[in-house]
View 1 (spheres, rainbow, N blue to C red):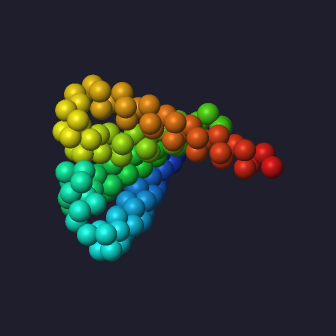
View 2: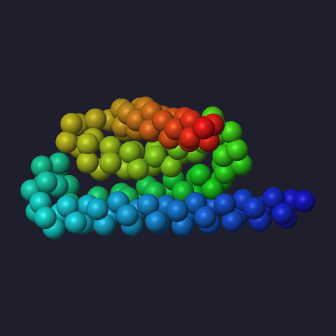
Amino acid sequence: MWERRLSQIGWSVLAGFGGGLFLATGFSLFVLIMHIFAGRAQLARYHTTLGTVIGIYYGGFCAGGVAAGLVAPLRHSWWGRMILGFVVAFPVYLGFGLAVVGPHFDFSVTTNLVIAAAVAAVIGGGLGLDDRIHRNR
């Protein structure tokens, strides 16, 4: 029994990591294309570099994907999907808060945690509710 459950969690974590890689690659390609056409000025305005943004995407989405894989059994309810959305979004927003927004506005780590949690709750909650609405049609 435990072996099967651990196996399911292991596959969920692996799938979450793969999903994180997929999302990070998509977002990174978008930023790369924007960087090519808009130039360095767009990122320099936020005191960051292309490498930093891509690193945040890969680190944040992969961490969020692994965390989502760990709580994957919650996906069967609408509130569980809201939590999954939060878990995926939180590391990305925290990464941007710590690396880009925080130093620019001189925010503390605690402030960045609170802001990242609030934004991830809105985004994650919205995704969970949106999924519930579409499933009930």
